[in-house]
Structures are given as C-alpha cells and as structure tokens.
Image 1 (cartoon, rainbow, N blue to C red):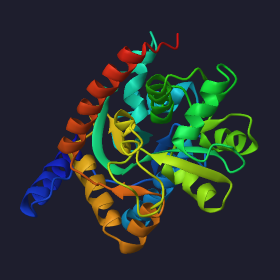
Image 2: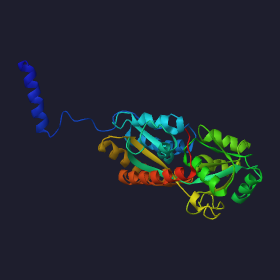
Image 3: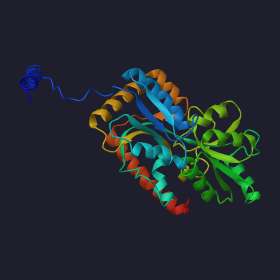
Image 4: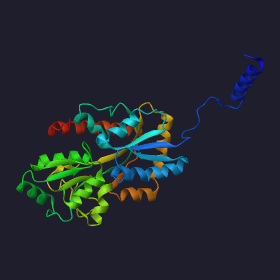
Length: 325
C-alpha cells in the first residue's frame, strides 16, 4: 500500500472516531423506494386497505411505498416473491390471513407461512359478510339455506380465491347448514362479486372493504356478518351467532410482513410509520368506513396472532376435509 493511501485511510478512521461517526455504517432506512406486494388483483379488500396505508407511508418516509399486485395460486405467487426477497426491507407484503391456510390445502407450498416471513403488524381486522344479489329471493340467512335445500346441487358460492377466509367461511357455512352447493373460486373479489350481482353464483362470503360499497349502493344484499357484534356500518345485518351459526364468526386480518431475517431497524421503522398512519383520524375513518377495525399491534403480538390463527384454520380444514390438490 502506498504512503498516501495509507495516510488517507488512517486519517479517515481518526476523523470518524473523533466525531463519533462510523464511516462504514449503512444509511438510514429507507433510502430508496419500497416495493409492497399484494398477492391479489386491484380492487379487492387487501388492495383497498393496503393502498390507504401505503399512500400515507410514502408521505411519512419521503420514499414511494409502491404497490405491485401479483395475484395467482391462492396468493402464493406474490407471497413467495417476498419470502425469497432480500431481507433488506425494500420488498414487503400485505396479505390477508388466508395465507396461513395454504399448507393445509395443498401438498406443495413454496414457503412456510410461519418461518419464512417477519411479522411487522396487523393493519386491520375485518368481518366477512355473506352477500347475495339484490335480486335474490333470499332475504335472510334462513331463506338462503331453505332455497339451497329445496334444490340440492343447483346453486354455487363464490370466493376471491381458494384458501381465502371467504372460501373457508363458505365451506364452514355449507357444513353447518347442511346444504349441497358448489364452491367456485375466482381470481379476486371484484370478478366474483360481479357474478354474484349478476346471479351466476348464489352467494359469497367476502371481506367488508370490497363488498360494503356494493351493499350500500343496493347492488348486493348482506345477510350476515362474521363479527362478534353487529357493525355500525350495517346495523340491521345480524351476526352469525344471532342466526344460530356462531362458529362462522371469524374476522380476517390484513397483515404487513417482510422476509424472514429482515433487520429489526427496518421492522421498527415501518412499524413506527404505520402507527403514525393509523393514528391519523382521516385514515382511521377511511379504513373503518370499509367495515374494518384498526389494529396496529406490535411485531411480537402479530406473530402470536398468526400462530393462533394457524392452529384454528388447521382445525377448520381438517374438520371440513378440504383438499385442493
């Protein structure tokens, strides 16, 4: 090493030590755009909640939190992109709780929903509502069950995809009501709801953000909600406990996750940003108007929530004998 270069290196080290600065420290996160993967098409409930939050995160961090919709394979395509991404905080995921169901439904899943992701926070939880076309003869849950029982095998129900909470709630409802109906999976909530409105399928269990606007617009009729109590947004719609189907009462969550191994610094920064977003009254109203409940829990709390849901859905799939292979 020549003398000049050696002196420069030594001088730089001394200068760094003298001012308390590590010249080799990584720049503060985030210093470039963050890619946010949503494994479902635009316009679905996960997309709606995700865009509300990411728009505000972009303003807080002065870096784009850009959503990319990567639908397919029951959400596994988009989720796997994040599971296999560099754990640097620049590729993260917003996904519905149905992500944890896939290992019980398929023989081959490209990632482990518990081990391959770093939980950041549950943005919001939402009830799922049972909807029918506004032209449907069924005006109550009881009437829908009677309609399906009168003509076994004639009717079908839609879901946004295999393995989603709406799919599982539909299967559970089918079992408890003892009705013979066929499940029809779609590539997202929007096309499924279009066919419910048109009467091509008899009913659908859908997360509130994507369907409540169609209910208030009079295109769909809501027969029941999967919450513990009636919702302010739909005060005249009963819970499933009220109609004798309490096991159907399950909320879905919209979770923010990164790849396993993501740094605590990045996790904490994003979590703090989300906390600020969710404290904004305007943001809270927009999310709550979708029929969702603000959560914003800690990474540890969210990890415990994921594990609990994993065990619950494992039991549901086993009891319903569901298998999509």
